[in-house]
Amino acid sequence: MSTTGTHRASAGEYQPQVDQAATSRLTAAEIYSAAVRIGEDELKRSSTGLALSGVAAGLGMGLTGLGSAAILAETGDGGAHYLLANLLYPLGFIVVIVGRAQLFTENTLFPVVLVLDRRRHVGNTLRLWTVVFLANVVGALLFAVLMIKAGAVSAEVAGALSRLGTKTVQGSFAHLFWAGVAGGWIIALMAWLVTASRFTIGQIALVYLMTFTVGAAGLAHCIAGSAEALSAVLAGQVPLSTYAVWLLAATLGNTVGGVVIVSLLNYGQVIGSGRDFQQVERSLADIEADAISTSATAQRRRRR
Image 1 (cartoon, helix red, strand yellow):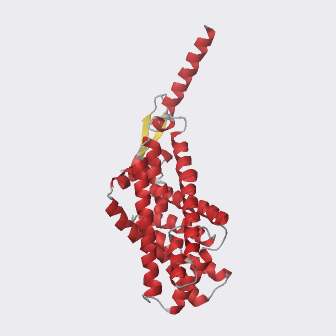
Image 2 (tube, rainbow, N blue to C red):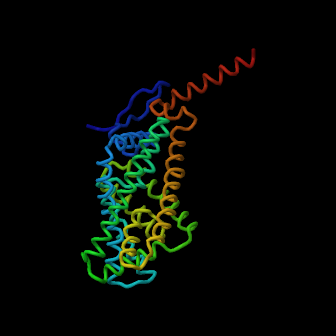
Image 3 (cartoon, helix red, strand yellow):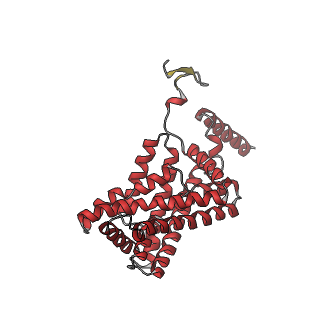
């Protein structure tokens, strides 16, 4: 059966009718609605479930550093070699996001949009953030123990992983904070775009492209970087206090980037004047007719 046909519009003109199933691009309002539903589902989960999922995510995020370290172990250090190594940087993000494990930086979008929409659930959102963040760090620590202390990888790969961790924590607090803002913005934006994607292959492509940019640009991500930095801590190359300062700066930056740049702006672009969201389901002809009617009413009042 054909997916297109014709129907008579309210103005008497014939316009093409497109089957809704044939359209693949969601509107911003539809993405927003999906994000609100996801945020609601996440806040329903128990702290135990969130913690276990968060630990799994922290472990999975270690794959970002492991993949890069495996390449560096063969190619050696150097600017071009680091860029080559970042080709595998998205691996951990793909595993965690497509697998729907709990990642702290993703949660700067979904629960926040829900809070903005409902004007409540702040306490529950803080619970989710706290549990998931701590669980992510524990998972990253377990990854570091497996790679550095348990001897799961060769000395060359472990050394490259430690060097990545040393490189990760370098910089002033201000630099790390703003690198975290940019990184948090990209990751939360990625979560918004993944919500709009209908197919898994499209989600994987989006995650890869967005997170490759984070790695290649040397931006800060509090969980992916933790797996590398904690490896350097366990190898004795980075003091624990240095890691703690880096984690604070990166986490604050990621939160600001995700909440302010992505969540608030996308909430604003969908809700708009307060009428935009309600007008999504209406036809353009009806909206224009209402505008003409309102304008005519205003003119009559002025004449009086």
